[in-house]
Amino acid sequence: MNTTKKVTILAVGLGLVTLSACGSSDGGGGGGSGGPKTVTLVSHNSWAASEDVVAAFEKESGYELKVLKDGDAGSAVNKAILTKDNPQGDVFFGVDNTLLSRALANGLFQPYEAEGSDLVLPEYRVDEGKHRVTPVDTGDVCVNYDKEWFGEQGLTPPKTFDDLIEPEYKDLLVVENASTSSPGLGFLLGTAARYGDEGWPDYWKKLKANGVKVVDGWEQAYNEEFSGSAGGRQAKGDRPLVVSYASSPPAEVIYADPKPKTAPTGVAEGTCFRQVEYAGLLENAKNPEGGKALLDFLISKTFQDDMPLNMFVHPVREAAQVPEEFVKFGPQAKDPQTMDPAKIAENRDQWVKSWTSLVLK
Image 1 (tube, rainbow, N blue to C red):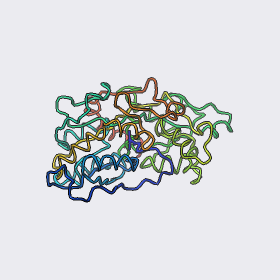
Image 2 (image 1 turned 90 degrees about the vertical axis):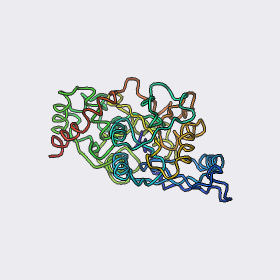
Image 3 (image 1 turned 120 degrees about the vertical axis):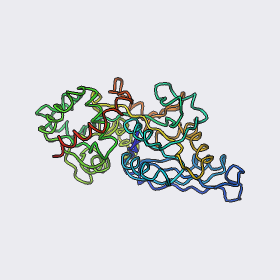
Image 4 (image 1 turned 180 degrees about the vertical axis):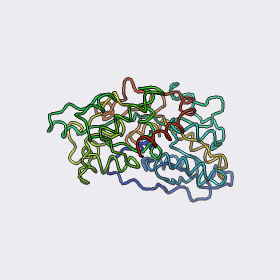
């Protein structure tokens, strides 16, 4: 999700920092094995969890949780692959379905079937024969729009991919680089799913001709260029359309002071692509037992219930709680674009190369 999101993903003005909660220091950590007392999670920048939930994990497992945030999801995955022989941590969180095949092909993870895997909703399960990754969250990459801007202009916001190439939306959209950003790649895959192998390049030619702006990552696109976000308003962003997430509008409500009755941003549902984020036990983890305990925790009901309002993604566990704000301001898309992971694996690198040549040059 992003990036998880993601997204991660979406909390405006959260000021997220690396978590290193205070764990047990009485010598009883490591599950009584005498092994390392710290378990390290490597993630993209959007990881977040409530302090009391982290404390509950540390108390139950006996491990102190250290979190290393390593940039956007795309760059974090690439770095994890480059350092796989001597990994920075024990568990990696934040590889999504757009990049999963790259991680698996490079032997990033070792098998482990997390406790509670049978409670993950079937549509999010992958690699069930080997259990190299555990689904943790899901979210939709979608174009967001600035309601106030469109209201002032008397212009109807776009609803679909087709709308974005119409003349009335010229010079309004900012997107992330598909080669460096998870939501940017998700948006590219959404267009490939919508227009097909042969049709998506022509669509992007039209989008480029219609003034699309490309920036490196989500943070710049959403919090600097987009006029509808709290950060974008402060930065005097002038693009009323941005590639973000379906859960961005709830974040704008929750972190506003005072809270508005309605979200200041909306989602063009016909532009959504569904992402799923996974975590896995790194192949050369120094503390594999701690890593297994952490993976169990990530799909526990405690964490899954806590996750939405921290990382602004949807849970994947059956009967996990979805916040009221999500239901009201950021429901999942009813008919998002999707793509088989095998097709992503087969085409992703060539599509990104073609996209780069077509859009950036």
